[in-house]
Length: 193
Image (tube, rainbow, N blue to C red; front, side, top):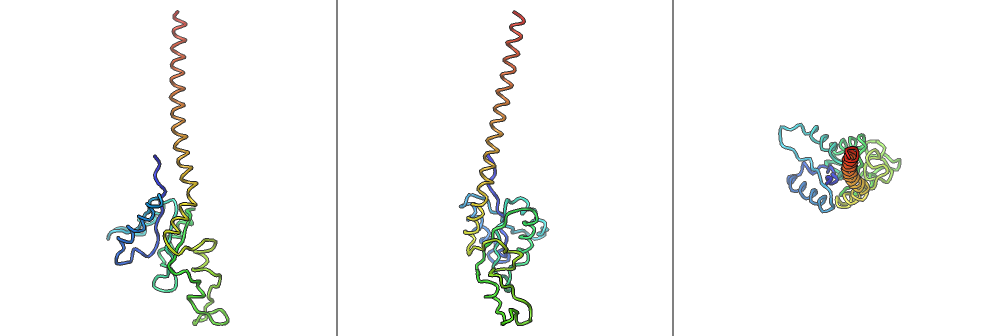
């Protein structure tokens, strides 16, 4: 039997005081959706960066919480994980507890610049276009997980078809081998007769 799809659960939840409980909740949401959730909570002394990269490599896709964290933007570690997954060709699905646009979060003057004179990105997005461009940002992890499962359904079906095809090939080889041995036996009997 093939393994279930795996979703890497990126986000700042690892910093919460209840990180283990929140990770278990997110993993349970994945199980309810029929997939495995990989939550990157690591013990001290572990190379956390490499452990996260390894988990992303094991995953079929990434579901990221891009809610503002310690400011107006998402957690920078999560941004790295989104970029890494993108670079590895993994699908990325997003959610945020704050779905306001950047312009709604960062008031801009009439010239479109913030109080420090920097341009406020006004693209109707909840986060920088390098993260969000072309993707829907859901309001809950359940919604993002459901989108991931729906989008990856073909992958899961393809794995099952590959498993079935391998089984049929093995059966066909066994039948062919039996037929060849039986034919050889018959030929030997006819020659000996």
